[in-house]
Image (cartoon, rainbow, N blue to C red; front, side, top):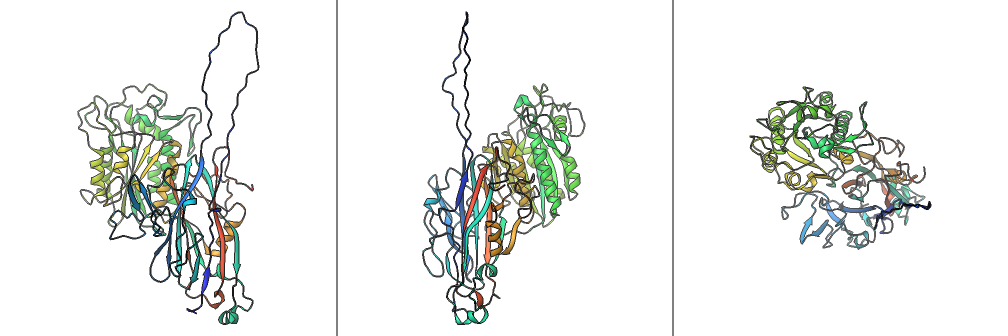
Length: 567
């Protein structure tokens, strides 16, 4: 059987990779009323402009193939030198991907290049599809292997980039075809009708590759600190804390008439906890907070809101009512704590002079002390830091603590356990938080650990991505490749979920389900497809071919409910 060829032709043409559909808004205003007046006046507003936003879906990918000699790079986009490994030149520097540690590339990051974005992902027309590593034949489509044997496998991780506006995304298949090919003697003994059996023989897994590393990651124990900005700009309108004064938000039964940044933090973090509970995650979670200092304070107002615990109901309780808890810290009397109830939580109250400074570094130090004291041996350590501003010294007697130094200490093996440091910048100045972000044992400034949120309404979806990193990566479907293609070909295809912390079943729930969310714009989202032809497959697949097209389709979130084209 090893001398007889099985053939797999998974066709993804340049014309079929992407479907982008955006609704363009047209606005007009007219006036048709005129009167004669004894007195008259006019004010003219010139050069008015109405412009549509963008909805542009870009895709990059890394594909590997294992034909018995380990993972081999097959094709990638972008691939500046055509060697099959994802690479791109950005600002004169070549940045490369490496699926596994690369002794010759100290900057290999084990993930689709995190620097890729809507500004530097090349158009699909510039993509090349590489060569078949077994036959050396040039590939005209994304997957085109001509000599597949039992035991062979392959994987593609697609990185999806929605430019500008958020949108719903579907993954689709089309033009699925199977053929039995030439009937060989061995095949005739078990498949005399020479049917196309390859789709039923190949096993496939489709999943959200949260860290974009081309590998399915199972669950591991992890201790997590949520380190949250409790400064006045997260709540009070005077400092930009109100996101929408007219559109309120409901959080676990509490309804507000307006939406503030801290409300969105509460929604996102409590969804984060709900998801970990639903997944029975092996986690401990704690919460730290940081503000600045009032003029009569002797030290920055930072601390632990909830110590590390595996009782996630306690963490959820600590994260409830964050408006009041933040107000207690920033507008209460000297020495206020989150639970003393002496603050004014009205976002439109007079908040003048409530505090100066934002002590991000001290908040990180507090969180790391908690990890050092109550973290579990052998558990991965993670600190998630959210802020809407730069760290700076207040006017009191406290000396400023460098947030970069605190972050360096957190990521290092001492003085506390080495910790993954994720940072979330909420429409503030990003430079400090970006410099802080990085992996345990690594350096700062790693874009894979930094989330730049230009619109606070996207805060919950960021916590959804981070929650998914704390558990086993979510499998959308695990079945034969034929059945996966059937699901992708049916109706609008498989509706993908932009926030994995909301419990949504892509196979059975309706596409307009409340738990399915749009993908936020200007961010990287990864979906992976892995296939394997098992060793125990028989002669019935000799000479068989399987072909299909894949499409990622998107439509804007605004004015759509996610129901799709066929609803």
